[in-house]
Image (cartoon, rainbow, N blue to C red; front, side):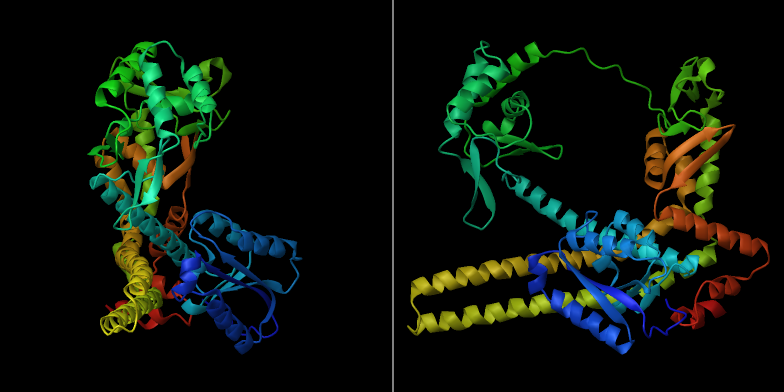
Length: 524
């Protein structure tokens, strides 16, 4: 959020992104973003030096145009006036934490035009904190969309449809209802069947079966060694009918290539050949190999004494490292103190939540507008179908032409409907899940103390990284955005100890232009 709104004469780069070609059709077009940003630059006297564009997802780190923009800004002299990025809004620039860090290290000014926010290296820590939460929620939005894809795959599995790429011996085709299904490949199905038959004799190795299959015309679909591909194929129950997906068994509707009896015989031979002794079950130590020695960098390993006392020590503790044993309960208390840094005062936490919700009003409106555009396009297609059906009844168009065009439009409608549902589902939860992240941080100590060892470890892995132990002190690094949460919570606690009131804490953390300065919350 800007304190100084005089941008006359500064130089900037412009960045626009859509995640796919489909978004171009859904109203998120690159030209629309460029028009908005160019108009903003012209209104504020900003000179645009370069424009960078991506039609790629921001879920993963990097992108072609993004990387080119970063390289361009890195080449700029620190004294150059071009230290500014113009972008539509947060999730157009990044939806993953790695790109967020990359931009943060450039020490540039970022104008999020649609959000009316300007972030700079001189911005207050609270502004960076709120922005970091927005980045996390943008990432959460992408994750939610990904969950919808997983949900669709799970629904296919429950219908008996193999939900992924066809394995050897099958091929993917479109079913009668438009869903992708698998059918036997006329070229390779018999080859895969003979692979099972040969292995069932007990006279062939995996390598021999693989070489024979390739000689018969099998083309491998999976990367990796021939032996590994054949081994994976021979243990896949899909070939007799059933399949396992995400830990659950389903009865498939695909045509089997072999019988259940042949598959069972192959598994018996595999078990006889590769029978191994069961692995010894280890105790579930909460902090095993998550802490490194601050002296030599080696991992701290666990050791059980008298069957009930757990100690941790450096891998090279015997005369090679000055660090001695440390009891598990001592480490646990240290982690409690560290997680305590994430706790806000109750009033301040309520203010932060409300401020975040209010700051996303424009974002929510943008999502609703996107859904409205998609619904309008869907309704237009339905009107075309209805009108053409009347023309078909009146004999103005032939039945074949009607079937062809209506099938195309129905397919477009199905795609639009999926996009609408994805936006609505993700939109309903991503903000609240961002707020839930703050609740998690505030309750981290309580959750940690009540959980068994395995859950303690999961919580610590989610919040912390790169923990070191030396001279009786545990030093962690907070993962993003918990590092910002810890920084702001600690600053608030110090100011409160120094005598600052709740209103002073909130007022000091907001610039004059922020709408929350005069919110009724300050006068409660």
